[in-house]
Length: 382
Length: 66
Image (tube, rainbow over all chains, first blue to last red; front, side, top):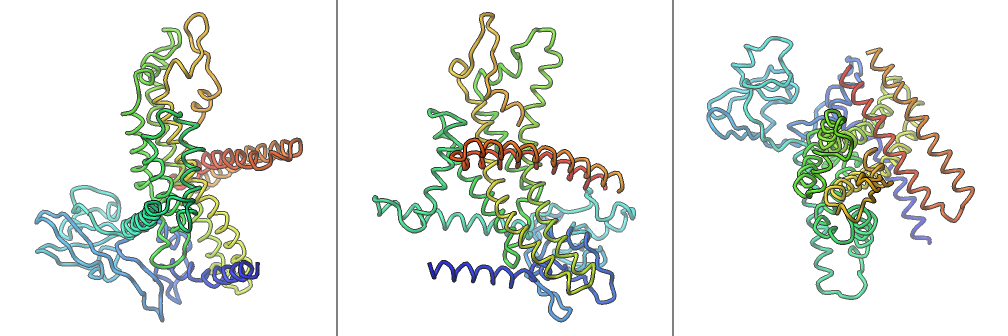
């Protein structure tokens, strides 16, 4: 008991000690003494992507971990360090590489000559034809590769321990096994069914742990963590797109029959069929937005609370906002696990709808129309 | 900007009503059947997360509209 108490104390002290880093790490190197503090700029810096990993400021000098810039240009592959931009993000600093010149504006890399021809309002926006294809290892890509490595190490260690130990699991495997059986018994089997769940377990386990670990990495406030990966719309888009592909390709005859010829009077087809077809896309779309919005909102709230200190420019605000940040951080730890669970649960539910055997799952009345059961209604509302 | 704020406020009202109803019903349910507390809590948290998701859709729209 003594050890447990001590370690809780230690963790609490550690959390409080590290809280200031959150503010420093996300300050973006732009807080000059004479410049007005801009909270929304700070927050946008943090939740967005960037070509270098800004760690902290020391005596006005930014400490930065530079990541490689990889471009596919008109002259072929071009690789250089992001330190060449010298922290410029307004399109003023020219970088020469591979016989071409580049500028960077709002983390978007342009050809320098074509950048000059852009109108003022087009600069720094998403536009095509004036910029090379950007395959850089950005902050988010870096953090994604790192979390993939963490998961690989974690689970290959667990798998190895099962190979030589065929008694009850110990250590790390003992910690992971309940989580894996939770995904199997509480997510996969109830939603997909006893017969077919095994085929989808690898995918469900992968997204569950990938989202969960990335959510937690986003909450750790210092280098090399703290990036807002699961709060990036492109990342969540890819995850939900994979769910969409799996759902569509494993959909059986009954699934498509329900969509193209729903069991309603023929007169309703012009309304029902488009709705059902749109429904195929809205379900993964909602998955995408839900994860993105939950995680991004969590980061925004935490950073806003920290920003209060600098907005009021008062020491007395610090303990108040620190306490709120601690509260929000703990809440976000719950949300991290919850969103991974919800994403996996809904993916399993959609897959389950697609592979459901018609005869076993639905009752029919005497006219051959379906009597919808609770499961159907639940699936329609989510 | 003001309209985005109003939109976010309306979404917060909706989410507040929704989560309030879930919390109230969960309290009732726990009072009736204290032995089922953990199951009720799990279901409550999931339902709250889904409602929160809807409210956050509105936040995203408000952010874009800004």
